[in-house]
Length: 384
Image 1 (cartoon, rainbow, N blue to C red):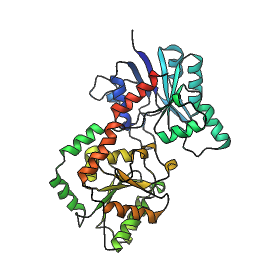
Image 2: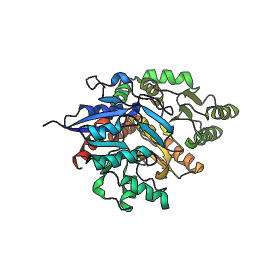
Image 3: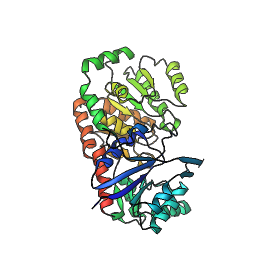
Image 4: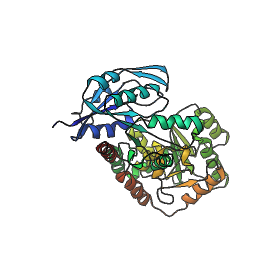
């Protein structure tokens, strides 16, 4: 008996999902086919079309579609999907679950009329919606036979709103941790120290790092303000900022005006793991004052704990990977003073880098990796 056909419909084919897409393409239990455009949108790196072959080492089964953006994030028409719903052998369709992506309503309704199973891959509830907006979101999610959720926080909110527990599947998220673990293993301590001494006046100082887009919502100003405060207290720390964005100039101006050039280094945007690894090897703590998402996974992959705030509504679901006191630490939301207290608290912990690395890698190995990610998606389909 041939395996059931699963259509995985994506607006984009983001590079960070290559690992899980590849694992799904390898399984023999179901036959997964990705549908998505090769276009890049919003600065998100996409999977190269050259990998549209599951026989490649990191390849995936992928049918190219074309996107027509009439209204970004609202009205996007994806070619070829209606045809597959009506005239193909796909048994189940997995759609990205953005409620305001209007064509997905149509696609889901057509699937139900044709007797096709529907899963939404979504963040679910975050706790912000009330009134009519919440009702619309509930109606939308009820179109699906099940929801693939990124975290338990959302699952519990949805259960409180009347959703059946057995229709909510927490699949978490993942990066290609295999490559990152290998890069970390191959790095040599003497080389790390040598490279660190090239960018900092005192390479022995406790070092914090940030990775992400440089936008106001990330509150990177909090981090630099803390670097300045520690400097004035004669207890300086080093700071590495990976990323680019509209806040770059104002952040560099702050560093210059407060004479923090010896303690702060901007790398600009980096996409190659080989380049990113080099800087995380220098760091003791990743600080993300605004929110965390996949940058939390990035940090854990390199064995670096995470400091961020404690309001889960504003985070990506990856924040659930942080175990306070072990793989990171949380400060009171929007409280700069508490952030500096928690930063100093971690600074003087007696953990070795190896002890923290083991704890960070343990949670990734159990939950946030492509193999586990794909396994949970397959288990969800089993239960439809």
